[in-house]
Amino acid sequence: MDPTTTPPSRFYVKDYSEKFGAVEYVVFSSVLVASAGIGVYYGWIGRKKAQTNDEFLTAGKSMPILPVALSLICSFVSAITILGNPPEVYYYGTQYLLIATGFIPITLALAYIYVPVFFRLQLTSAYEYFELRFNRANRMVMSVISVIYLILLMSVWVYAPSLALSQVAGINTYLSTGLTFVVCIFYSSLGGLKAVLWTDALQATLMLVSLAAVVGKGITDVGGIGEVWDIAERNNRVEFFNFDPDPRVRHSFWTGTVGGYLIYAATQSQIQRYLSVPTLQKARLTLFINMIGLILIIVLCFLAGLVIYAKYHMCDPIKTNAVETSDQLLPLFVMETLGDYPGLPGIFVAGITGASLSSVSSALNALSAIITEDYVKKWRPNYKDAQLARISKIVSVVGGILSFAFVFVAELMGDIFPIALTMVGMFLGPTLGLFTLGMVFPWANAWGSLAGLISGIVLVLTISAGSIIDSDSIPDQKLPVSTEGCPFYNETDHIIYPKADVFSSTSWKDAEYSPWVKIISLAPTWYPGLGQLSTIFFGLIFSMVFLRFQNVKPVKREYLNTSILRLYEWGLPSYWIKGWVEPLELNLKENAVESDNNIRV
Image (cartoon, rainbow, N blue to C red; front, side, top):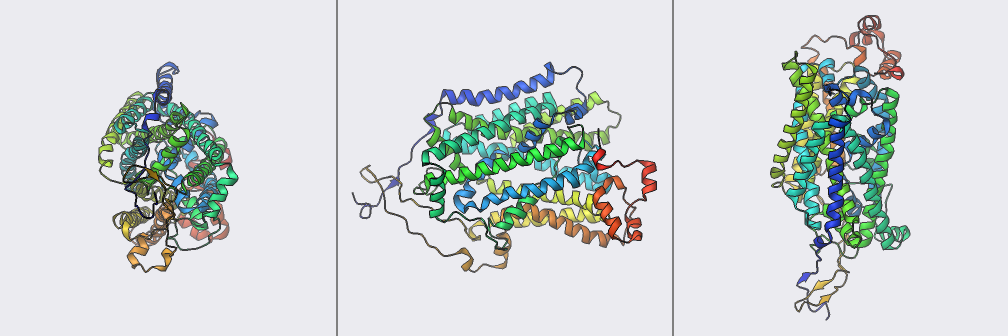
């Protein structure tokens, strides 16, 4: 039958849920059991003495490098990362890969600017730094924002991948989210950070193995990496050096290198990991291993996106309604590619589940540290260490239950991936911006920095929320996809194949947009960077304004980065430095400042 004369009535869509059978559930369950087992070991069996609060929240500052480095990977990579990044390559091309280059400068910045200060002060709650450097108001605002952020984002971290897997593999959403939270609450509250770090190591390995298996099998099925690349090149998806400075461009050289640099941040969960090793040198080494792991994850997501495009470039699953959203492309690809191999889909689902477990367990441990250190210790300074340890465990349980309750709110949000991007950008960028104000700019003062933080959050929230609410007005930069090779059911239920789709090649830049639409069209990669830079910019401006209304004391040297302070002392007038920083002699009498290279617990 000629498809040009008889239009098809509907696309032919397969059901893959039956391929997720008993073997897959065994593999999936094994990950949950192994994670819970690690919690049991470090909570009961492997504990030689009563677990102190310091051991619960910082693993006794005696962890080996490798599990901490793998755990750092997990603190950055969530299931949303694994499901959401391959479609970026599928729809926008290879420019996405440049994000990996941004991890190099941010790792150097963390290793030599931020981590030395954290390590010198040895703070269990990262936000205690803001009280020492600025005032209690900065600490409380930052910790309140962090608590809200963690509780809300945990629900998104679990619900989004569970929904994607449910619609493709047939796994019950409430069952998977409920099991994830139960297991996370169990081993996080029982074994503390040590259990979290070792389970993260297991889950990071599982993520890498599952992604590598998917990519390797996909490349083989398509006909080799050369064929995968040729298909992308023939369809104008290969591009690496787009130097367009327009911040609306979703992926360019600048969004990859500069935006990729600014997307990383120093959060409570990450800082706890830096301080879980005994020396600064080991902390730096964990960062460099983490950098290699993050680059490897990005490369695997990049290859997964290319392979998915090579498979579906003639039959887009979104247009055919095979899946509803782009985050389901990778699960669909896995079920079609690995579905006939018992156990392999289970490994993939276990990898996604492991990513969710690691994100939630890290957040629960960070939540315990924030609540215990920022609030309980302030309200009950006479509590003994054993009491604080019990409270930390209770906070972990209650925080997990609250976050699970918000899963039912997330269910009403529709497409929650843009909301996750908004939350990450609104929090990560301003957080690192406030740390930067404290450690790098000695003339930044308390109220000016707080005003800068609030300005940065409001700015990112306005732009990102506007992009969600007015999403139909934002230019669509997706590259064309086709349904030329898709099977259809016609009216008599015979499968037919239509002719090629015809696409418009009009550039999105040729259209006219209002100033408001131009603003909210900012590429999401820039959200954390915008939050960070605006917090620093407004923080410095407001610091100069508030300088006229408050008596600012010189900053203690241990609150600043030593190397940057030396640059100031070398290049700026000495009377400026005396107004900003405590004299070295006074500082040494009160609290000797060690060289960054010799800091040790």
